[in-house]
Length: 282
Image 1: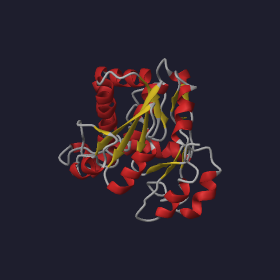
Image 2: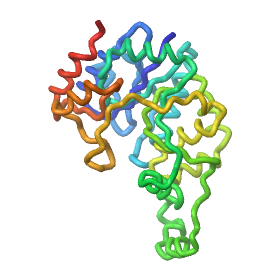
Image 3: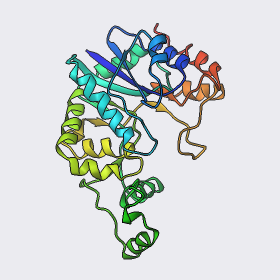
Image 4: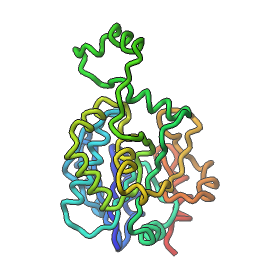
């Protein structure tokens, strides 16, 4: 049973090349989608152990373009007709903690299950943040009347809130490993529900809501394992996880993570060297 490993990247050719080399395995193919804002040529010239996808998107943080790039990548890989069980989705700032053969074995033991973090909206701080991202329109054209501050105040005073287009709202990290069955469901749903897609075009950080909400409101819900095996550090309480350093190595080593995120060889290459001592196939 084979898997596809999908990497979305926009920077740091040397680190991506090092990552791709660590992912080589007879039961895996590596695919790269380069953000259309940057030139693809330097990556293609340096990396020869991966397939470069052509349906690229100029990605803007927080916009639906983040979701669109994922959907485009999935559709292009599916169109190749190869017999994969899963597509494992990572970024160029992930780095293996576990040997890739162990990661593949975990997929082989779960041929019908996807690995995706998911949380049903409640009353906790994260849920309140997610509600703010979709209850009012985001990213409207500047001449749209709904951008007018007085209109916004009226809507707020009236208690108007956009109705979520699913029975239940789910959110989670945008890094996951999905079965081909679930990816085909996701792509089919997207094609046949343009009104829902339109809703998420005006939602902030839709990449943390859309995929979870489609799949956890689907007949495939029981096949979604709530685990993505990533090591993050959110202690900085910023928009993104903290860049990890060698001081984090022991904690990462003792986790059950497949990948550590985020790493940057230009900030601390020693961490990658240390991770290489534990992610080597025996």
